[in-house]
Length: 366
Image (cartoon, rainbow, N blue to C red; front, side):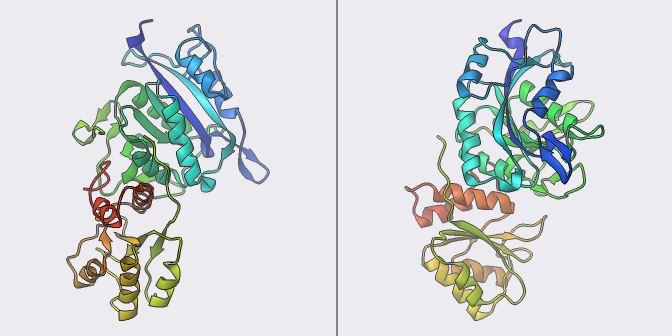
């Protein structure tokens, strides 16, 4: 087989519902279950190819695989006449995504960097914090020239009726056949820009949506790529943890805000009402202005799923006058991870960080 007839994809399996089994107290992760199940299904492993499945746990093992010196799995040819060879790098232990931390975002980015000889990457991840990870990776993976897709499932592969098969086949098919050099999220036949998506449902199979930006790919009878909205990117950075999210609510006081804006906090995502409005009481405005004057970067986003922050109302303009930066139509996940990314750059001043929060770096703003 000629090299041009196949794509090599690395699947980074971090955990999540997709590979769980039913235990006495509900779904539980089962090491190696997903990888062994894929090997047993002809849709994921072509028995006619002279290749064996590899579950190597080391980076060197996967480097050997990419050079053809170790075993691997191969999917059957698609209608596009291209075969997808893939290896699975399974984390030990597997993580529930609610336990995913900044260090794990960096670990995923590092594994992609170390294995960049692969043509594309699929990250299997739990759904609860998947949109945070996809947003974080969109900033961590600078100068990205290959497709990176996060996916998972609401119902695990172990169940007869599940969404795991469709989500994994869809992610592998897109990663193997198209160069979309972004960090994306694939779910329920739709590929989204990773920093534009939020989890909308804990029980629907269409668990994610991108209310302020169109999908990059729709999968039906045909795979339709929205090439007009696919961006071309221009070192992996360490994130800084000293940031938080503050959701405004009726009756919030200046004292509460001051208590929140304490060291080591350097950045805050402020979830405001409507189009960027906040209570106009003097104690609230003074507390926000004090924080901004102290060098804390405060970014305002809307609490509305379909919304954006503009200073069209007086209640919004006063936030800008206090030093709060409008986050326009960024999702909460994206605003938080972008702020983390910028705070991790020691060469940037507070003013430069504030300015860059309003500039699209990875297509995160309209």
